[in-house]
Length: 555
Image (tube, rainbow, N blue to C red; front, side, top):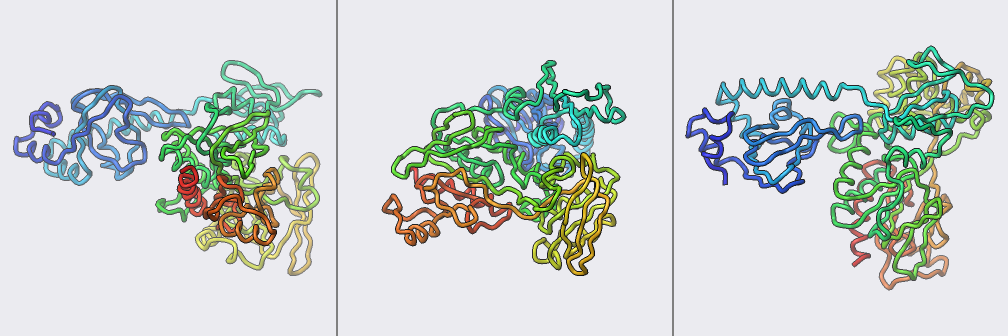
C-alpha cells in the first residue's frame, strides 16, 4: 500500500501539501518486481512511475541492437516523456533487483501537473533533458558489424546485402567497380577475383560465404537448442510469427524456422496502411521486427538461414520431425506450415539473364540507393507493386507501373490507387506487357507492348522489379500432405472431401481440425493454405488460430 510517508521521501514530491500527497497515495498503484521482471515494454501504454525501492534499468533497441540507456535509483521518477508527447512507451524498463514502484495512470499524471506549477516546471525540464539524450543515442550511426565488398550487378552480393538488411545486421558496402562512391578505397577487381567478400568486425574475411555460415559468424541462431519441441513453425511471415507469439506465450516449447529473414514477403512492404491498430501505417519490416521481439520475449527460438528439406510425417506416428539442410533433424510434437508463397517468374526473354543485374522479384529495398535519379519499371498491379512504387518514387527519377489488366481497381486497394495518382513521377500504364529485357552486362532497356494498340516500344530502364503474383512452393512436402492442383495445402473440410473422393483414409476417428492438414498434428496457416485470404491480417489470424488447434491435438 502506498502511503504519504513513502511519497514524501521522493524529492520531486517532498514539497507537496499533505492533502495532495494523500490524494496521490490513494491513486498510486503499488507494484512489486522481482529481479529480471519487466515493468513496461517499449510500445506499451505509458504510465508515470516513481521508484521507491531497488534499481531499474532502461533499455531500447537501436539499429537492431539492445542498448542500456540508463539506470534509475530509489527516489527517481520516469515515464513523463511519452505521457507529455502523447506517444507509447519509448523504452523498456526492467528491475535489476527486487524493486517497488508507485505507478500513476495517464489521467492522474495530467491532473498532477495541471494543479502544480512547480511539478509542471520540473517535469518539463526533465523531459527536455531526456528527449535530448534520446535523440543523441538514436541518431548515432549504426556500428557496422560487417563490410561487404562486391559489385552491384552480382546476384550473390545482392543476396548477402538483402539478407543482412532484412535481419537488421548493420553493414558497409564497398563496390570495387565504383571507387567514386566508396568512402574507403578498395582495389578494382582483377581476373580470378571472387565476390562478394565479407569482412567481419574482427578482420575475418569470408569469400562468397553461404548465408548459413554468415549467419553463424554474426551470432544469429541457426541450430536448435532442444531435441524435441511442442511446436515447430516453418516460415516466419505474418502467420508464422503470430503462431510463434501465441505458442510461446501459452507455454509451448516453440521453434520458428526461416530460410531468409523474419517478415516474409510482407516484410518487404514499405508501408502497410490498412493494418488494424496502425492509423498512420506501419512498414512490413517494422511489423515483422516487433513480432519477432515479442515472440523471443516469450521464449520462442528463431533459426535463420536454414532450409527445410522434408518432414517425417507418418500419420500413425505421434511425434513429427522437420528435416533441415545439412542432415539435421528437429523433433516436434506438432508442426505448422506457414511458408507463404514465392514470386511467380516472368516469362520474357532477358529475365533470367539479368536476374540480380537489374531484374529483381519483389521490392528488393536494398536496391533503392542504386536507382537514385534513374528510370525504373515495376511489373504487376497488386498491393505489393503499389507499395513498392510509392517507395521507389522517393529515389528514382521516374517509376512506371506496367499492368496487364484494364485498370487497377480489381487488384489494388483504393487508398494505394489514390496515392499513386498523387505522385508526379509515377506513371501507371494499363494493358501493357513486357516483351523482353535487354542490355550488355546489366539491364539497360525494356521492350514493352501496348496490348490495346499493338505498339511495341523499347525504353531505357535501370531496373525492373516484378510483382506478377505468387505460387505455393510445396513440392518438398511428403505425399501424405494433400495439396490442391496449384500446390496449396488443404486443411479441415477440404481434407475430408478430398480423402472421400480418392477413397483414402483419415487416420483418426475425429474430423480434421479447421486448419489441420491430412496428417494429424500438422497444420497450415497463411498464404500457403488452400482457400486463404492473401492479407497480412488474415495470416496473423490464422497463425494465432493454429495454436488453439495445436493445444487440442496435444491434449
